[in-house]
Amino acid sequence: MTFGKKLQSLRKEKGMSQDALANQLYVTRQSVSQWENDRTMPSVDLLIKISEIFDTTVDALLGKPETESIPQPMAQAKTLTDKKSIKTAMRYEYSTAVIVLVSMALLFLGMYAVMMFIENNIFSLTPEVLARFSRSIFNVWKNILPAVLCAAAGGVLTIISFVHTRKAVEFGKKHACTLNFFYDHLVIAEEGAEPLSLFYTNIKQLVETDGYFIFKMQNKARFCVDKSELENPEELSKLLKSAKNYLDRRLSKTPTGMGKVKRCAVRVSRDFFFTASFFTPFYITLIFGLVTTILTENQFVRFTVFIIPFLVVLAATVLGVVFTVRKIKAKRMIIAGGAAIVIFVVMNFAIYNASVIYNFQHDRVKSEQFVTYMEEHGLTVEDTIKGREELYISKCYTAKPKDNSFEITYLEFDEYSQNYGLFSARETAGRFLNEIRSQPRMTTRYTSQDLAFNMFYTETTNNHYAYVSLNEYSVIYINAATEAEPEIKNVLKDFELSKPYVF
Image 1 (cartoon, helix red, strand yellow):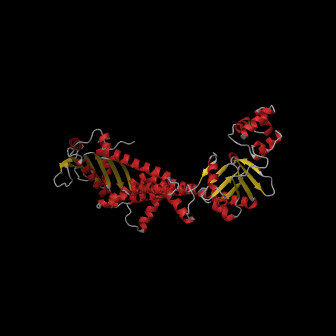
Image 2 (cartoon, helix red, strand yellow):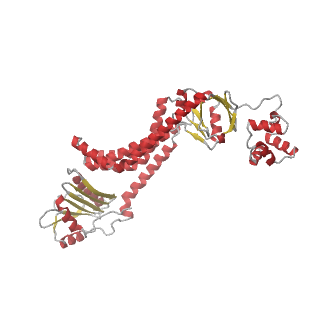
Image 3 (cartoon, one colour):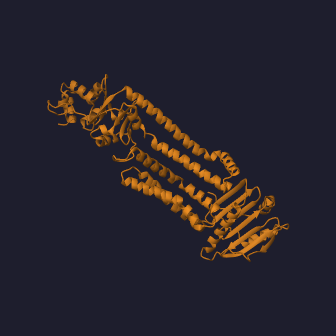
């Protein structure tokens, strides 16, 4: 007969209800019901109390012969008391969160450093350039604020970890205990004190790390147990996992022979690549902008640097697969890397097909519109297609004022050349951008929007005003002295310049 059936039989023989028994044991009626249905077992203290109520023995309640002893614990271990062992046990409690936060801080700083590099057009690290660069970083404190916050959060968690470790060390030195693990409860036996029986659900947190179990009590006490002292740590791990307050801080699913240095390296690389997967879209834009600013001729180098973020995501995915095969917990790397690759594919498909799906400039600027508008505003328009070297160009006009203080160039490309005109228009707009960015400048104000074959860029520096507009098959280009900016804006104030749709 099982314990539940035996308890039910004894209760009915004595004419006692579940509520009456529960009141005598200071438990709920549901607990008694679960015992009788063999879903749970009472603690040792309650078993003794039940045996006294029904005038029997614990062995009889458990259906064992009188000669058998009280149920033995499934595992038994002494808590750690020396400072070095407790510090080692507590080492990885907050490590994952700290690594992720520090990684985010570094990636934020790297991202904004590249942005400042591009904006300031730094090609030589002279003292003057470095001073200008440092002033620019200081002026964009709002941009580097996320990096500072992430670093601060990582520092706070590190301090919290240090404080908790110190408290655990002080507690462990003063309270040498033996922990007896049963299937439904834990008995804490401290020398010179009565044993304390606790259900696993009454413990604040059960933390399992690579080589240790950490038991956080409601009174902020911490007991650390070395797994190597247990005969069956895997069975105890399975038992503790069933508790809702269980936290798995292990690096690997099964015990490995990794040393401390290798374990730290694996943990850092895993968490860094996982974090980098989310920052890759930012770096795609930044790295491409940097390369197109500096390396304008070598297309192979431009392409190679452009795919670096893709390689990072691919490396994270592959590394996640390798770690998972070797029983290291890295499934989130595979998920993050795979999701990032899908996002990149969808993003590139949307960008390079956006002009087909939706024309952001519904009324594209035609050559006839350009000529008519400029002549109405007193500018002289000339056909300057002769000598132009752009591929698939069909028309080219240059508008000038009477004093020739500036030029507005309009180029139109063949829209019946099976998309070759589209690519030629974009390549021409990119060349104009490179010409603008190669100008020496100390301060820059610019506005930029770019999506597939719709692009808008305007820039004002200390010595020139520039504008480039790309709208499918047409390009408008202006590069004049700063003094001409008011006159140019006055001429173009009623002209519908090409601007892509803003989400």
